[in-house]
Image (cartoon, rainbow, N blue to C red; front, top):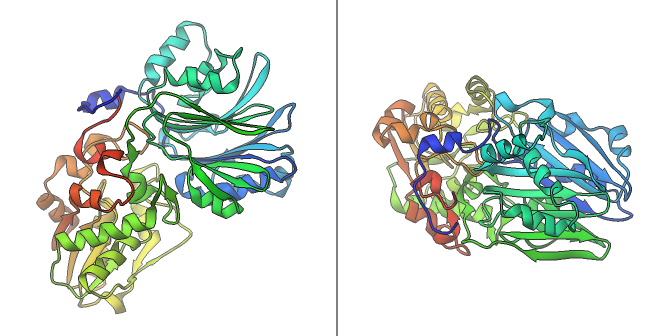
Length: 467
Protein backbone atom coordinates (compact mmCIF):
# COMPACT_ATOMS: atom_id res chain seq x y z
CA UNK A 1 0.00 0.00 0.00
CA UNK A 2 2.99 2.32 0.19
CA UNK A 3 3.86 4.86 -2.46
CA UNK A 4 1.53 7.00 -4.55
CA UNK A 5 -0.13 6.73 -7.90
CA UNK A 6 -2.47 8.54 -10.25
CA UNK A 7 -6.03 7.26 -9.88
CA UNK A 8 -8.28 7.90 -12.90
CA UNK A 9 -11.48 9.89 -12.33
CA UNK A 10 -13.61 6.99 -13.50
CA UNK A 11 -12.11 4.69 -10.88
CA UNK A 12 -12.86 7.25 -8.19
CA UNK A 13 -16.54 7.38 -9.04
CA UNK A 14 -16.80 3.63 -9.13
CA UNK A 15 -14.49 2.80 -6.27
CA UNK A 16 -17.14 2.80 -3.58
CA UNK A 17 -20.74 1.86 -3.13
CA UNK A 18 -23.49 4.24 -4.20
CA UNK A 19 -23.32 5.81 -0.74
CA UNK A 20 -20.00 7.40 0.07
CA UNK A 21 -19.57 7.94 3.80
CA UNK A 22 -18.24 11.45 4.21
CA UNK A 23 -16.31 13.42 6.83
CA UNK A 24 -18.46 12.87 9.91
CA UNK A 25 -17.98 13.45 13.62
CA UNK A 26 -17.26 10.63 16.10
CA UNK A 27 -17.44 10.73 19.87
CA UNK A 28 -17.05 7.78 22.24
CA UNK A 29 -17.14 7.69 26.05
CA UNK A 30 -16.24 4.97 28.56
CA UNK A 31 -17.08 6.27 32.04
CA UNK A 32 -18.60 4.13 34.80
CA UNK A 33 -20.61 6.32 37.12
CA UNK A 34 -20.65 9.28 34.73
CA UNK A 35 -23.54 10.71 32.65
CA UNK A 36 -22.13 9.32 29.41
CA UNK A 37 -25.16 10.16 27.23
CA UNK A 38 -25.24 13.81 28.32
CA UNK A 39 -21.48 14.23 27.91
CA UNK A 40 -21.63 12.57 24.49
CA UNK A 41 -24.39 15.03 23.57
CA UNK A 42 -22.07 17.91 24.47
CA UNK A 43 -19.25 16.27 22.53
CA UNK A 44 -21.43 16.04 19.43
CA UNK A 45 -22.25 19.73 19.77
CA UNK A 46 -18.53 20.42 19.45
CA UNK A 47 -18.42 18.25 16.31
CA UNK A 48 -21.57 19.62 14.67
CA UNK A 49 -19.46 21.26 11.96
CA UNK A 50 -18.50 17.79 10.73
CA UNK A 51 -22.06 16.81 9.84
CA UNK A 52 -25.47 18.43 9.92
CA UNK A 53 -27.79 15.90 8.30
CA UNK A 54 -28.30 13.49 11.22
CA UNK A 55 -27.08 12.63 14.71
CA UNK A 56 -27.25 9.70 17.08
CA UNK A 57 -26.10 8.29 20.41
CA UNK A 58 -25.96 4.63 21.47
CA UNK A 59 -25.37 3.63 25.09
CA UNK A 60 -24.35 0.28 26.61
CA UNK A 61 -24.97 -0.82 30.20
CA UNK A 62 -23.09 -4.11 30.28
CA UNK A 63 -26.12 -6.14 29.19
CA UNK A 64 -27.63 -4.40 26.16
CA UNK A 65 -27.35 -1.40 23.84
CA UNK A 66 -29.98 1.32 23.39
CA UNK A 67 -29.87 3.96 20.65
CA UNK A 68 -31.55 7.32 19.98
CA UNK A 69 -30.98 8.97 16.63
CA UNK A 70 -32.69 11.02 13.96
CA UNK A 71 -32.43 13.44 11.07
CA UNK A 72 -31.25 16.98 11.75
CA UNK A 73 -28.83 18.83 14.01
CA UNK A 74 -27.85 17.56 17.45
CA UNK A 75 -30.18 19.99 19.25
CA UNK A 76 -33.08 18.90 17.03
CA UNK A 77 -32.58 15.17 17.54
CA UNK A 78 -32.25 15.04 21.35
CA UNK A 79 -34.16 16.40 24.30
CA UNK A 80 -33.95 15.85 28.05
CA UNK A 81 -36.25 12.83 27.96
CA UNK A 82 -34.36 11.06 25.18
CA UNK A 83 -31.02 11.61 26.90
CA UNK A 84 -32.36 10.38 30.25
CA UNK A 85 -33.56 7.21 28.55
CA UNK A 86 -29.97 6.37 27.59
CA UNK A 87 -28.63 4.81 30.77
CA UNK A 88 -25.28 3.04 30.85
CA UNK A 89 -21.54 3.53 31.21
CA UNK A 90 -20.40 3.43 27.56
CA UNK A 91 -21.58 5.66 24.71
CA UNK A 92 -20.91 6.21 21.01
CA UNK A 93 -22.11 9.33 19.20
CA UNK A 94 -22.14 10.38 15.55
CA UNK A 95 -22.89 13.47 13.46
CA UNK A 96 -23.31 12.70 9.78
CA UNK A 97 -22.74 14.49 6.54
CA UNK A 98 -24.34 12.80 3.54
CA UNK A 99 -24.89 13.65 -0.13
CA UNK A 100 -28.52 14.53 -0.86
CA UNK A 101 -29.39 11.14 -2.38
CA UNK A 102 -28.07 9.28 0.69
CA UNK A 103 -29.52 11.57 3.35
CA UNK A 104 -32.10 9.03 4.49
CA UNK A 105 -33.12 7.80 7.97
CA UNK A 106 -31.89 4.22 7.48
CA UNK A 107 -28.30 5.48 7.14
CA UNK A 108 -28.36 7.45 10.40
CA UNK A 109 -25.66 6.34 12.85
CA UNK A 110 -24.67 4.77 15.16
CA UNK A 111 -25.85 1.56 13.54
CA UNK A 112 -26.78 -1.13 16.07
CA UNK A 113 -26.63 -4.84 15.29
CA UNK A 114 -27.26 -8.07 17.16
CA UNK A 115 -25.13 -11.07 16.24
CA UNK A 116 -23.79 -14.25 17.83
CA UNK A 117 -22.85 -13.75 21.50
CA UNK A 118 -23.07 -9.95 21.52
CA UNK A 119 -24.53 -6.68 20.31
CA UNK A 120 -22.56 -4.00 18.52
CA UNK A 121 -22.94 -0.29 17.75
CA UNK A 122 -20.77 1.21 15.05
CA UNK A 123 -20.00 4.82 14.11
CA UNK A 124 -17.82 5.54 11.11
CA UNK A 125 -16.06 8.49 9.50
CA UNK A 126 -14.55 8.09 6.06
CA UNK A 127 -14.91 6.17 2.85
CA UNK A 128 -13.88 2.73 1.65
CA UNK A 129 -12.32 2.39 -1.79
CA UNK A 130 -13.28 -1.26 -2.13
CA UNK A 131 -16.85 -1.12 -0.82
CA UNK A 132 -18.38 -2.28 -4.12
CA UNK A 133 -16.19 -5.38 -4.04
CA UNK A 134 -16.95 -6.03 -0.37
CA UNK A 135 -20.70 -5.56 -0.88
CA UNK A 136 -20.69 -8.04 -3.76
CA UNK A 137 -18.70 -10.55 -1.73
CA UNK A 138 -21.09 -10.33 1.20
CA UNK A 139 -24.12 -10.37 -1.06
CA UNK A 140 -23.01 -13.57 -2.76
CA UNK A 141 -22.78 -15.24 0.66
CA UNK A 142 -26.40 -14.34 1.40
CA UNK A 143 -25.97 -11.20 3.51
CA UNK A 144 -29.04 -8.92 3.58
CA UNK A 145 -28.33 -5.18 3.72
CA UNK A 146 -30.50 -2.67 5.57
CA UNK A 147 -28.50 0.46 4.69
CA UNK A 148 -26.35 1.74 1.84
CA UNK A 149 -23.42 2.72 4.06
CA UNK A 150 -19.86 1.45 4.21
CA UNK A 151 -20.39 1.18 7.97
CA UNK A 152 -22.74 -1.79 7.58
CA UNK A 153 -20.13 -3.57 5.48
CA UNK A 154 -17.56 -3.09 8.24
CA UNK A 155 -20.00 -4.42 10.84
CA UNK A 156 -20.53 -7.57 8.76
CA UNK A 157 -16.81 -8.25 8.59
CA UNK A 158 -16.43 -7.70 12.33
CA UNK A 159 -19.22 -10.22 12.92
CA UNK A 160 -17.36 -12.79 10.84
CA UNK A 161 -14.70 -12.82 13.57
CA UNK A 162 -17.14 -13.11 16.47
CA UNK A 163 -15.11 -15.84 18.17
CA UNK A 164 -12.17 -13.47 18.62
CA UNK A 165 -11.72 -10.65 21.14
CA UNK A 166 -12.95 -7.34 19.77
CA UNK A 167 -9.47 -5.89 19.16
CA UNK A 168 -8.34 -8.93 17.22
CA UNK A 169 -11.55 -8.87 15.16
CA UNK A 170 -10.87 -5.25 14.20
CA UNK A 171 -7.28 -6.00 13.20
CA UNK A 172 -8.53 -8.86 11.02
CA UNK A 173 -11.00 -6.50 9.35
CA UNK A 174 -8.28 -3.93 8.75
CA UNK A 175 -6.65 -6.33 6.32
CA UNK A 176 -9.66 -6.18 3.97
CA UNK A 177 -10.67 -2.53 4.38
CA UNK A 178 -9.07 -0.16 1.86
CA UNK A 179 -9.50 3.58 2.10
CA UNK A 180 -9.67 6.30 4.70
CA UNK A 181 -11.58 5.80 7.93
CA UNK A 182 -11.84 6.30 11.65
CA UNK A 183 -14.12 3.89 13.43
CA UNK A 184 -15.78 3.49 16.83
CA UNK A 185 -17.25 0.12 17.83
CA UNK A 186 -19.12 -0.51 21.07
CA UNK A 187 -20.28 -3.82 22.52
CA UNK A 188 -22.25 -4.22 25.75
CA UNK A 189 -18.98 -4.08 27.74
CA UNK A 190 -16.24 -2.49 25.63
CA UNK A 191 -15.49 0.55 23.51
CA UNK A 192 -13.03 0.22 20.64
CA UNK A 193 -11.55 2.48 17.99
CA UNK A 194 -9.58 1.92 14.82
CA UNK A 195 -7.85 4.29 12.41
CA UNK A 196 -6.83 3.46 8.87
CA UNK A 197 -3.12 2.65 8.25
CA UNK A 198 -2.47 6.03 6.60
CA UNK A 199 -4.26 8.16 9.20
CA UNK A 200 -6.39 9.98 6.63
CA UNK A 201 -9.24 10.69 9.03
CA UNK A 202 -8.46 12.10 12.50
CA UNK A 203 -9.10 10.46 15.88
CA UNK A 204 -7.79 11.23 19.35
CA UNK A 205 -7.96 9.86 22.89
CA UNK A 206 -8.57 11.78 26.10
CA UNK A 207 -9.19 11.16 29.79
CA UNK A 208 -11.72 12.58 32.23
CA UNK A 209 -11.48 11.33 35.80
CA UNK A 210 -11.49 7.54 35.56
CA UNK A 211 -13.21 7.70 32.18
CA UNK A 212 -11.87 7.70 28.63
CA UNK A 213 -12.98 9.68 25.60
CA UNK A 214 -12.44 9.14 21.87
CA UNK A 215 -13.23 11.93 19.41
CA UNK A 216 -12.65 13.05 15.84
CA UNK A 217 -11.15 16.33 17.08
CA UNK A 218 -9.55 17.55 20.30
CA UNK A 219 -12.07 20.43 20.55
CA UNK A 220 -14.67 17.85 21.63
CA UNK A 221 -12.38 16.74 24.47
CA UNK A 222 -12.09 20.35 25.61
CA UNK A 223 -15.86 20.75 25.56
CA UNK A 224 -16.49 17.91 28.03
CA UNK A 225 -13.49 18.78 30.22
CA UNK A 226 -11.35 15.82 29.17
CA UNK A 227 -7.56 15.96 29.11
CA UNK A 228 -6.00 15.25 25.74
CA UNK A 229 -4.05 11.99 26.03
CA UNK A 230 -2.76 11.42 22.50
CA UNK A 231 -3.80 10.83 18.91
CA UNK A 232 -4.78 7.33 17.86
CA UNK A 233 -1.93 6.26 15.59
CA UNK A 234 -2.48 5.26 11.95
CA UNK A 235 -3.36 1.57 11.82
CA UNK A 236 -3.86 1.38 15.58
CA UNK A 237 -6.70 -0.32 17.45
CA UNK A 238 -7.68 0.89 20.93
CA UNK A 239 -9.94 -1.22 23.17
CA UNK A 240 -11.26 0.28 26.43
CA UNK A 241 -12.68 -1.96 29.14
CA UNK A 242 -12.90 -1.96 32.93
CA UNK A 243 -9.09 -2.17 33.17
CA UNK A 244 -8.61 0.88 30.94
CA UNK A 245 -7.32 1.10 27.37
CA UNK A 246 -5.18 -1.43 25.57
CA UNK A 247 -3.42 -0.71 22.31
CA UNK A 248 -2.78 -2.95 19.31
CA UNK A 249 -0.71 -2.12 16.25
CA UNK A 250 -2.02 -3.09 12.85
CA UNK A 251 -0.71 -2.47 9.39
CA UNK A 252 1.50 0.61 9.20
CA UNK A 253 1.89 2.67 6.03
CA UNK A 254 3.36 6.11 5.57
CA UNK A 255 1.42 8.91 7.23
CA UNK A 256 -1.00 10.69 4.91
CA UNK A 257 -3.05 13.02 7.11
CA UNK A 258 -5.70 14.92 5.15
CA UNK A 259 -4.47 18.44 4.37
CA UNK A 260 -8.05 19.60 3.80
CA UNK A 261 -8.89 18.89 7.44
CA UNK A 262 -6.47 21.67 8.40
CA UNK A 263 -7.47 23.99 5.56
CA UNK A 264 -11.23 23.85 5.99
CA UNK A 265 -12.97 21.02 7.75
CA UNK A 266 -11.62 20.90 11.30
CA UNK A 267 -12.53 23.44 13.95
CA UNK A 268 -9.75 26.01 14.39
CA UNK A 269 -9.31 25.26 18.10
CA UNK A 270 -8.53 21.61 17.41
CA UNK A 271 -5.09 19.99 17.36
CA UNK A 272 -4.79 17.18 14.82
CA UNK A 273 -1.77 14.89 14.92
CA UNK A 274 0.28 17.49 16.77
CA UNK A 275 -0.58 20.45 14.53
CA UNK A 276 -2.70 23.36 15.75
CA UNK A 277 -5.35 23.94 13.09
CA UNK A 278 -5.58 27.69 13.68
CA UNK A 279 -1.82 28.15 13.41
CA UNK A 280 -1.61 26.15 10.19
CA UNK A 281 -4.27 28.47 8.77
CA UNK A 282 -2.59 31.59 10.09
CA UNK A 283 0.80 30.57 8.66
CA UNK A 284 -0.89 29.74 5.36
CA UNK A 285 -2.03 33.35 5.21
CA UNK A 286 1.49 34.55 5.96
CA UNK A 287 2.89 32.37 3.18
CA UNK A 288 0.21 33.71 0.85
CA UNK A 289 1.32 37.28 1.58
CA UNK A 290 4.93 36.35 0.81
CA UNK A 291 3.90 34.92 -2.54
CA UNK A 292 1.37 37.51 -3.76
CA UNK A 293 0.69 41.04 -2.56
CA UNK A 294 -1.50 43.27 -4.78
CA UNK A 295 -2.03 46.93 -3.93
CA UNK A 296 -4.95 47.13 -1.53
CA UNK A 297 -6.47 49.07 1.36
CA UNK A 298 -7.59 46.26 3.66
CA UNK A 299 -7.79 42.51 4.17
CA UNK A 300 -11.26 41.02 4.38
CA UNK A 301 -11.76 37.44 5.66
CA UNK A 302 -14.48 35.07 4.50
CA UNK A 303 -16.00 33.81 7.76
CA UNK A 304 -15.32 31.48 9.41
CA UNK A 305 -12.64 29.27 7.90
CA UNK A 306 -10.90 32.17 6.14
CA UNK A 307 -10.45 34.30 9.26
CA UNK A 308 -7.16 32.84 10.53
CA UNK A 309 -5.54 32.90 7.08
CA UNK A 310 -6.69 36.49 6.52
CA UNK A 311 -5.26 37.52 9.90
CA UNK A 312 -1.93 35.95 8.97
CA UNK A 313 -1.96 37.66 5.58
CA UNK A 314 -2.74 41.07 7.09
CA UNK A 315 0.01 40.68 9.69
CA UNK A 316 2.62 39.75 7.08
CA UNK A 317 1.49 42.39 4.56
CA UNK A 318 1.09 45.19 7.12
CA UNK A 319 -2.51 45.88 6.09
CA UNK A 320 -5.62 46.46 8.22
CA UNK A 321 -7.58 43.31 9.03
CA UNK A 322 -11.29 44.15 9.05
CA UNK A 323 -14.26 41.82 9.32
CA UNK A 324 -16.43 43.41 6.66
CA UNK A 325 -18.67 40.42 5.98
CA UNK A 326 -21.34 39.94 8.62
CA UNK A 327 -22.18 36.30 9.23
CA UNK A 328 -25.55 34.92 10.24
CA UNK A 329 -24.48 32.36 12.86
CA UNK A 330 -27.65 30.32 12.44
CA UNK A 331 -26.96 29.10 8.91
CA UNK A 332 -24.92 25.93 8.34
CA UNK A 333 -21.74 25.53 6.33
CA UNK A 334 -22.25 26.12 2.61
CA UNK A 335 -19.58 23.63 1.53
CA UNK A 336 -21.41 20.66 3.02
CA UNK A 337 -24.93 21.57 1.91
CA UNK A 338 -26.21 18.58 -0.07
CA UNK A 339 -27.47 20.43 -3.18
CA UNK A 340 -26.23 23.32 -5.29
CA UNK A 341 -29.47 25.29 -4.93
CA UNK A 342 -29.19 25.07 -1.16
CA UNK A 343 -25.54 26.19 -1.28
CA UNK A 344 -26.39 29.28 -3.36
CA UNK A 345 -29.23 30.25 -1.03
CA UNK A 346 -27.09 29.65 2.04
CA UNK A 347 -24.44 32.11 0.83
CA UNK A 348 -27.03 34.88 0.58
CA UNK A 349 -28.53 33.98 3.94
CA UNK A 350 -25.17 33.53 5.62
CA UNK A 351 -23.01 36.54 4.63
CA UNK A 352 -23.76 40.21 4.12
CA UNK A 353 -21.15 42.90 3.26
CA UNK A 354 -20.93 45.94 5.53
CA UNK A 355 -21.05 48.72 2.93
CA UNK A 356 -19.69 51.41 5.27
CA UNK A 357 -16.48 49.40 5.62
CA UNK A 358 -15.88 48.22 2.06
CA UNK A 359 -17.28 51.02 -0.11
CA UNK A 360 -14.65 52.56 -2.43
CA UNK A 361 -11.97 50.28 -0.99
CA UNK A 362 -9.49 47.97 -2.71
CA UNK A 363 -10.12 44.73 -0.89
CA UNK A 364 -8.06 41.56 -0.51
CA UNK A 365 -10.67 38.87 0.07
CA UNK A 366 -9.07 35.83 1.74
CA UNK A 367 -10.78 32.45 1.78
CA UNK A 368 -9.48 29.03 2.79
CA UNK A 369 -10.11 27.35 -0.58
CA UNK A 370 -12.13 27.43 -3.76
CA UNK A 371 -13.85 24.18 -4.70
CA UNK A 372 -16.85 24.80 -6.94
CA UNK A 373 -16.52 28.57 -7.26
CA UNK A 374 -20.16 29.49 -6.71
CA UNK A 375 -19.68 30.84 -3.18
CA UNK A 376 -16.79 33.07 -4.27
CA UNK A 377 -18.75 34.31 -7.28
CA UNK A 378 -21.70 35.28 -5.07
CA UNK A 379 -19.41 37.00 -2.56
CA UNK A 380 -17.62 39.05 -5.18
CA UNK A 381 -20.96 40.07 -6.67
CA UNK A 382 -22.28 41.15 -3.26
CA UNK A 383 -19.12 43.16 -2.59
CA UNK A 384 -19.47 44.92 -5.96
CA UNK A 385 -23.05 45.82 -5.08
CA UNK A 386 -21.77 47.22 -1.76
CA UNK A 387 -19.48 49.60 -3.66
CA UNK A 388 -16.09 47.90 -3.45
CA UNK A 389 -13.55 49.45 -5.80
CA UNK A 390 -11.42 46.32 -6.39
CA UNK A 391 -11.67 42.71 -5.21
CA UNK A 392 -8.55 40.56 -5.13
CA UNK A 393 -9.49 36.98 -4.25
CA UNK A 394 -6.69 35.07 -2.52
CA UNK A 395 -7.00 31.40 -1.55
CA UNK A 396 -4.97 29.95 1.32
CA UNK A 397 -4.61 26.58 -0.42
CA UNK A 398 -3.64 25.28 -3.87
CA UNK A 399 -6.27 24.67 -6.59
CA UNK A 400 -8.56 21.71 -5.81
CA UNK A 401 -8.31 19.72 -9.06
CA UNK A 402 -8.94 16.13 -8.03
CA UNK A 403 -11.80 14.44 -6.12
CA UNK A 404 -11.18 12.85 -2.75
CA UNK A 405 -11.84 9.11 -2.38
CA UNK A 406 -11.00 9.06 1.34
CA UNK A 407 -13.94 10.87 2.91
CA UNK A 408 -14.02 14.59 2.03
CA UNK A 409 -16.84 15.40 -0.37
CA UNK A 410 -15.09 17.86 -2.69
CA UNK A 411 -17.38 16.67 -5.49
CA UNK A 412 -17.10 14.90 -8.82
CA UNK A 413 -14.41 16.11 -11.27
CA UNK A 414 -16.90 18.10 -13.34
CA UNK A 415 -17.85 20.06 -10.18
CA UNK A 416 -14.26 21.11 -9.38
CA UNK A 417 -13.76 24.42 -11.10
CA UNK A 418 -9.93 24.22 -11.05
CA UNK A 419 -10.12 20.90 -12.92
CA UNK A 420 -11.95 22.60 -15.80
CA UNK A 421 -10.70 26.17 -15.92
CA UNK A 422 -7.38 28.01 -15.75
CA UNK A 423 -6.80 30.51 -12.91
CA UNK A 424 -7.50 33.38 -15.35
CA UNK A 425 -10.75 31.75 -16.45
CA UNK A 426 -11.72 31.24 -12.80
CA UNK A 427 -10.95 34.90 -12.10
CA UNK A 428 -13.30 35.91 -14.89
CA UNK A 429 -15.98 33.51 -13.66
CA UNK A 430 -15.97 34.81 -10.08
CA UNK A 431 -15.61 38.43 -11.23
CA UNK A 432 -12.48 39.31 -9.22
CA UNK A 433 -9.83 41.83 -10.30
CA UNK A 434 -7.15 39.26 -9.52
CA UNK A 435 -7.02 35.72 -8.17
CA UNK A 436 -4.17 33.83 -6.57
CA UNK A 437 -3.78 30.39 -4.97
CA UNK A 438 -1.22 29.48 -2.31
CA UNK A 439 1.41 27.20 -3.81
CA UNK A 440 1.72 23.59 -2.67
CA UNK A 441 5.20 24.44 -1.35
CA UNK A 442 3.75 27.37 0.61
CA UNK A 443 1.14 25.12 2.14
CA UNK A 444 3.85 22.69 3.21
CA UNK A 445 5.73 25.49 4.97
CA UNK A 446 2.61 26.29 7.02
CA UNK A 447 3.03 22.98 8.88
CA UNK A 448 5.68 22.92 11.60
CA UNK A 449 5.32 19.46 13.15
CA UNK A 450 4.22 17.50 10.09
CA UNK A 451 6.39 17.37 7.00
CA UNK A 452 4.89 17.58 3.49
CA UNK A 453 5.48 13.83 3.23
CA UNK A 454 3.14 13.28 6.20
CA UNK A 455 0.20 14.87 4.37
CA UNK A 456 -2.29 13.70 1.78
CA UNK A 457 -2.48 16.44 -0.86
CA UNK A 458 -4.14 14.30 -3.54
CA UNK A 459 -6.95 16.80 -4.09
CA UNK A 460 -4.27 19.27 -5.24
CA UNK A 461 -1.70 17.13 -7.04
CA UNK A 462 -3.54 13.91 -7.91
CA UNK A 463 -1.04 11.71 -6.04
CA UNK A 464 -3.24 9.23 -4.16
CA UNK A 465 -1.42 7.43 -1.35
CA UNK A 466 -3.71 4.38 -1.14
CA UNK A 467 -5.45 2.20 -3.70
